[in-house]
Length: 320
Image 1 (cartoon, rainbow, N blue to C red):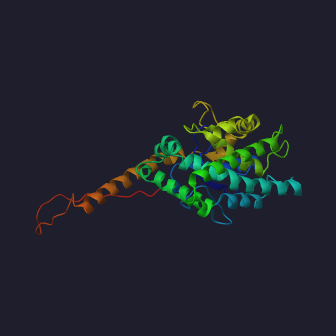
Image 2 (image 1 turned 90 degrees about the horizontal axis):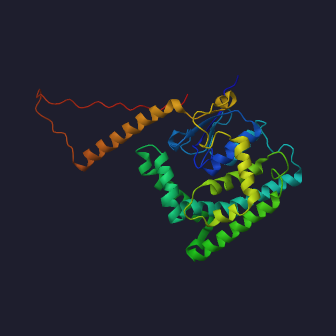
Image 3 (image 1 turned 120 degrees about the vertical axis):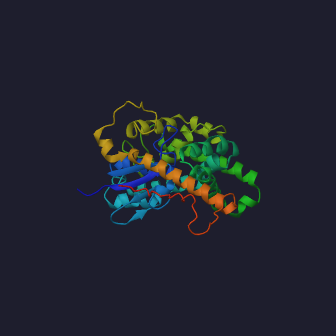
């Protein structure tokens, strides 16, 4: 039997199987199609073979690091959630995905990473608690900077003109986008009827973090919560496809053999990761001590007795 594809993604939180929208989209699409993935849920992107998340390790194409590339690869492997869609429905999928990326995604970035209250009290706090020491001292700030740059790239030069006015316009368009999604969904179970498609994975991955996160400043969140069919839609997908993946299940609840085979939380590697983190922290502190002159080495005459230097071994983390 061929080895399953390996997916590296951010771990879950807030009642979700992953807190990252791109990772959540890939996980959801894989669940919709039954793609056999060995899932590594991690809190350190450096454990990914590409250094970023999500990442899919494949036999045919090596490592794929973009959400759209991963889903395209799954389609090539005949795990296609859009197989039964008509040409019109395929065109609607492209239109709505474009709408999500243009109107909703910038506001999600702003809500979680730019809004000062949300970033300090919610986003940075979660990542600082989740990411292992000592990476949690600088990785959240690095991610914050990356999201700021991404948002500036989306906004273009207009962000330099009137940021406050631009923010109001951006949130207005995001509310209109949510309202349009609510109207398009109506009373249906999924956007194209009773079976999920790729559009459902994209919509769910954008809406669920906004719905489930406990944000101190929730301007857009309140509008989403007022659209009951979208809230029910997210809850339905979570209960149907991720019954034990949100961190809300009791610890004593047994996992099914199918989920054990398809997904793993990488428990055997936690202790190894902790040891590696401690070694990295020690190396960083010792290096700083030498560079700053706090500690120095004085050489004595040949044959003089003195303490032996401490030998340090670095343990390299391996994924099996």
